[in-house]
Image (tube, rainbow, N blue to C red; front, side, top):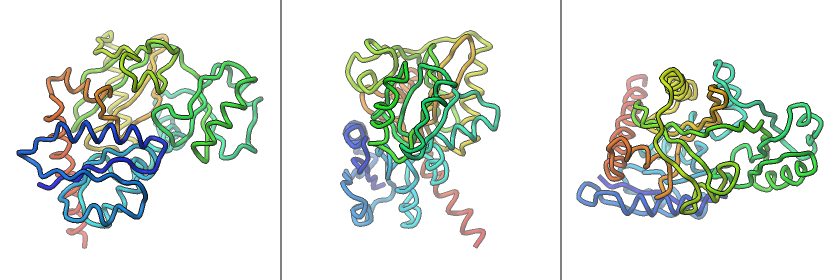
Length: 311
């Protein structure tokens, strides 16, 4: 099987994507796969660079990669790809839309507002919601352009910075508590990991990608809370129509879990959470990639067969 590892891209998370791609390339079994690195720097490169591959292993993050656009292009070309499909990728990339869907299903998520332009800036609305808040690009990732804001004086600057990275900005109530992440692989919930930032109050970019930036370890939750967290994580995947693999991030406060977001293409660097969770389940990195490829191949070819049957 010829596997094309697509990485780079044009989003603010390009550097993280390249790191993910490098780690994936280092762990793919060359006895099983004919591996082709595919670094993308602009949209129009994709069609030519994916010619001849059997499956695209997506190491992309952010816009044009994690938002369904690359997935749609690959669907059109008839090339299977790893991870969730077009619809789910698009929904999960839009934090405002995904939170609306989750809340409609009764899944707890922090209160929020979303502004589509700086003209909608309304500090009074945030004052009514209450500080502190997290200001973030609505379709961003890796905490780029994201800030913890404790008062109105800092709000405007944080909103302006977030608008540098995206066309819409989310302001979300800050849930102070225990941060956890739930990785899912082929319908199986892997060990839950607790996260504690080493220097900052929240899980920011430095905590995520700098060695020693955060303490991340498998945790054991009380039985009833564990059951609730697991049920919520799997329900998120179902509601948002995710498939193959992904990660559900939550905060726990006073025994209540709140879903922050669902990642359809979680990071796969040496510091990333999903590989750590897989390792805790006894799944080494190379096997994790094998399972992602095999499950994605089955998912894509099954859907292609269903479409052919309809025709």
